[in-house]
Length: 274
Image (cartoon, rainbow, N blue to C red):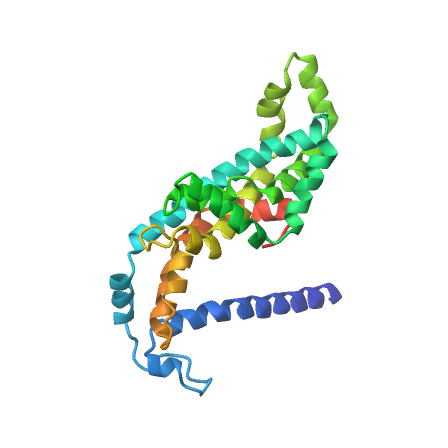
């Protein structure tokens, strides 16, 4: 009986927390179909629109080229995931399993990079991107995410959890270091790779500052940057802004629906949180 009561309390708390987390999304959805006057009302109980303003959707579609923005954003996310996963997996294996000169110093530099605010690296990164003539290009958007200090740390921890017997058995079978890595060790860290891909995708999708700096052209920027540029200097069109934000959420919602199992598995295995 006590166990049932305890489980009931836990379920109630989880439901309340879930509702609390869904309120901002619900508020965004309802605001997207209101008039500007309704969004400015002081009465907090006016939640549902009196008349659903469907034309807000058409106004936002005309004002923003979502096809191009989707292509830029999803291309940036996909390339960042690919680069970060490959570089982090290789470097994580090296730091976890190989012995070489300066290993501890180099790993300390990786940890130091995680402790420093990313804004410090914006100027040198922009100089490098400018020298490469990558401004207003997809590669300019991808550049900061090619190497991930967090990913290196995450993959190092994943490789350190694997038993040494696997490498010794592979060595006895005649495998060299690349063969041991590609055929034995890397496949066993699939869950950690999924977790890294999830973290990389979320951080890249909501990245705002870097796209606004490196891609000032509206045709080359991302969804987050385009949403920020919708803010007017003297007037805020909250319904259209919320409608644009609602449309921008669609890709991540679709990705989560199709990859829900991998999403939960990756987060649970990594022991991390977003």
